[in-house]
Image (cartoon, rainbow, N blue to C red; front, side, top):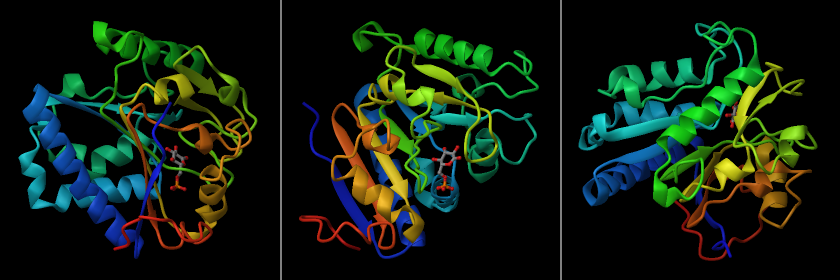
Length: 260
Ligand SMILES: O=C1O[C@H](COP(=O)(O)O)[C@@H](O)[C@H](O)[C@H]1O
């Protein structure tokens, strides 16, 4: 059985981003001290990128050994590599271009003008191969046990690029799928699925704003994952929700939640 979700509410989006960046530093440094390296799955979206910007400006970021960090993405907008909508491009500009990552350990999903051309199914299959190549025997499957997997969410309940009632929301086998006809632009994407997300040791769901409050409250009160995909996002050891006050606005009193 998965442990219960933990919820932490911050006073505003800036504080949430700064606190999440600080958590990441502590977590990644501890992991590297304990086992040599760490893995982190990045999310797109406003909150996810704000966290990376905070990390870039934090002096503590130098405590992370960036060369011993594997980076993956939870989803990608299937657009050309220089398209500003691309999650990888945004993450590079916010952080990755400013820290000494090992390029061989930055595992981006292919763009629509990359080696697989305009074929998101091929890009998804190739990313599944990347995951399988990085899985260890102790992972017992074709996906690495990601140490931390960051996810955002949409007001309608999507997470990564798993949209409500879409084929990706029903996927139980493949770790990565192409996603077409997304209700939120751009319409074509590549996404991890529930099996891949749930292979993470820790899933951290990060979001801000009143527009997310209904989805947050429904997810935490047991909504179905096909109708509300974010409800299906959980880690093997920990599922941590990091919210600002507005996103937590419909939760009522969350017991034992530190409020900053
Ligand atoms: O399109 C996407 O949106 C979600 C949420 O983004 P936000 O800006 O509303 O916070 C994000 O989690 C996902 O990675 C991204 O591709």
